Length: 194
Length: 168
Image (cartoon, rainbow over all chains, first blue to last red; front, side, top):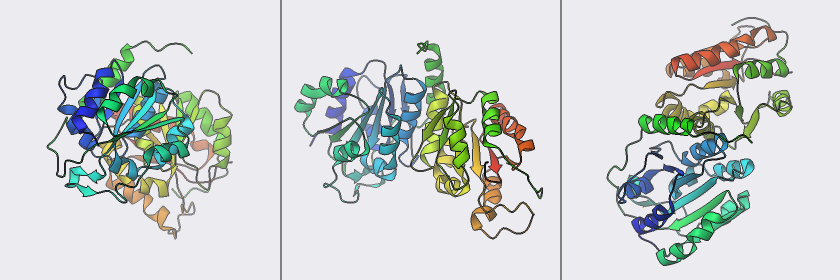
């Protein structure tokens, strides 16, 4: 099991110009990283597990832009059909990280149904993701991150992290501003002719 | 809304979507839309994005809009009810200029009271949420789709068209 912040530092070290959608507890941890968020970060607060759906829409609209989604396990469980929806559209620019803390931290740390016994990579592979990984050790994550990012996509990566056991303070606020900013930034990037 | 319709051709609806510059139809099939599926599949300028549950649709449409595309959401009223929190949290809270084409299951063109609760609750629900809507149940109504699309863009707000009969 990893400390969430340490796991996210590994991700942050590989981050370049990807759009990043954060959700729930992962948003709080991401907001504590130093350096903090970039202008391509969007926190989708609430929305009952739809971070991956939002990321899919961006990925389909802009195949030239890599999209990372930092989902929660409780959030994914609210929207499990998304795995099949993503696999059907099969975006080659989409990586779906799942913050697997086996708990609903944002409501106080209650366990998710069947906590500790859910195999998210198996679900993703079963849905049709060509690549899926499970990581529960920071050093191992550091060693594998480049291979994980280079694997055929869409990719799911379950990050086994410790639950906070309580509600996190607010992270980056959900924002209409973020949506408008990223929309404008994407519009400024020339879209290659396919 | 008591007109007796003659027909609603799926090709005519797709033509109207093309005129609007629609790029993606985010869609979950309903009992009335088989011909619509065929017509969209036959149109190379529009990408069909199939979803597993209607609540995914608003968020996918938001992402497509952020990426500069022009999606519409095509679902049935039962799916509209199911996707309630996504419509609240994404379409309304984020001022999404989204055209939602909603199959009007239970609609009674004769004006008789609707027996099917899916039909009976559709317009009251849209009114409660402040989502403007327009009925399309005949080929002569298809320009309303373009008007609703433009209305959504102008108001930066979701607008619905209610599809009152089976596509042919």
